[in-house]
Image 1 (cartoon, one colour):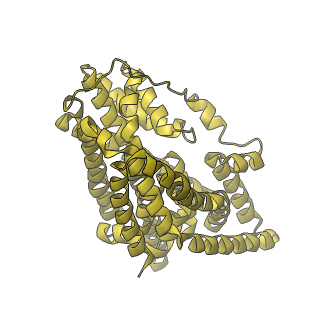
Image 2 (spheres, one colour; image 1 turned 90 degrees about the vertical axis):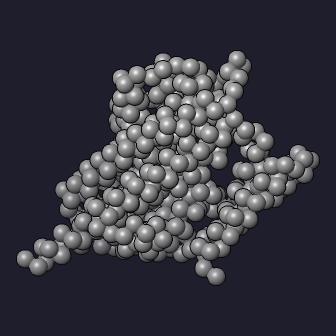
Image 3 (spheres, one colour; image 1 turned 45 degrees about the vertical axis):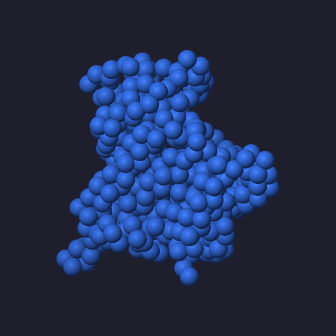
Length: 409
């Protein structure tokens, strides 16, 4: 049986087990989660997170050095950021449209008298941009600051490309390190079905289906918007710009999508997402190594959809009307915030707090959605990493066609 089938079976069993545990007494769920599900899921996550920083660093160094021309790297970088910002804006529009059609805030009775939420302050966008350049690269690696790690790796890769034969020994050392890390990824992935089962069962059991009641329409709105964005926006981009088959793309990338669903972390899924894109979709390693790690940090289409639906939901709960200028402000704020808040802990809720402040809605309303956010985060992560892979696939295919055309002439 293939690993993909094993993961699918594990996810289904995890959902069934989680639903059963949500109705079980706390005396049963508590010990089971504390001594079995929690540790198994956390060990699997730790194993993946253990190799995220080294594999991102090594991959980007090799990818940058492989591109050779710094101008080509800059061109790919601009294309990547534009793709992410455009798809984020489209995701927000889809989320707002679905929320206004389904009106999830009017589907139940919500008690807002005692809701409290203390929002975190996001750093100014210029501080984020300035801090992309690390003062201490080692500290950036130990803290997992992905933007700084990417920046430092690009510098090393460009230096290796410029120096050429002088540093061929170091380049080969990076190639050997990459082979070693890929071996570890393959070994860790053998545990993926067990980790996926434990993570899903724990998340659903902890959320408790009894508490979902009035939030059902909110969840339906978010899930529908996520599906529409993946099925329409990404499919059209893959077909129209990448000249590829969306069905073939989704079939090839499904193992990474299923892992993203279980881990709820773009960073944790990154090693597997890169490996899957390169091996199953034929994405060039030099493109994948740059585009996907950057996407894991700044591409948040799934999060953008959540923010759009949640903003309309909170506005409806508090019986507040949003004008056209408010809608435009939501789209602009959330799109720019996806880059400006990159790397901030709990970035989705931080961005949502920023959006709510911009349109004068109570930040306390976030407390209404926290109970179901963990479950929706699994789907958001799957969409986010799919967007990263779609961008890498499109750029890789376009580069391949340009080279083939140049060779013919």
